[in-house]
Amino acid sequence: MNLTVEGKPVFAHVIVELHPGETFIAESDAMSSMSAELDMNAKFNGGLLGGLIRKFFGGESLFINHFTNNTNKTLSLHLTQPTPGDITVKELDGESYCIQQGSYIASEPGVKLGVKWAGIGSFIGGEGLFKLVASGKGKVVFGAYGGIIEKEINGEYIVDSGHLVAYEPGMKLKPQLAGGIFSSLFGGEGFVTRVEGQGKIYLQTRNIAGLASWVNRHL
Image 1 (cartoon, one colour):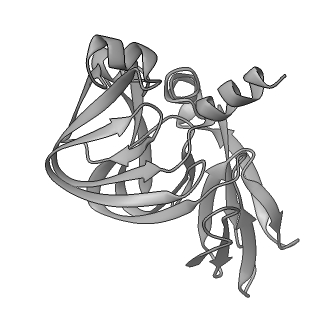
Image 2 (cartoon, rainbow, N blue to C red; image 1 turned 180 degrees about the horizontal axis):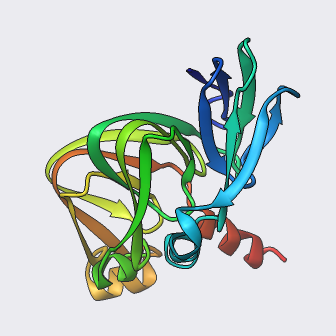
């Protein structure tokens, strides 16, 4: 199986080349085009109960699509995301990774998806009460609104609300005011997230909530 990301960083999309016998799993609305010979089967995302949990708490679809190449030749699958922006492919080798709600696009069958409590701090910081956790072995594809920035941290790092895309499970997220009370209320920043730990985080350069706010002000 070969995965290629093209159109980065504004209109990124994924081209998946499936060899005979291979299967790739994607969100229900991620496929933009595919070879006519590919077989597509819609299934509950982790069973009925698991699918409901991931839909209502993890921000993902109730159903996911399994694309399988049952021919004797290589077939192609094109995947995208609802918003314009960047896409990253991360290889998991038995470890876990936390992905923010709505960022997951697709993965190999060896990757398992689960939902875990993110904490009140994550909710106050604008990152949601629950987090999607990808674990296992294989490639996982996730996207963002705007470009994706990879950042290695060792200690503490401040991220504005809505800009954190993915992070390692051992990291802690703590909300705080961007500055003093006056600066936070009138400076337009409000709450930010203090990320504590060591490892790699993924950030998005744009915030969909910020776009919605800008549009509402100009209606």
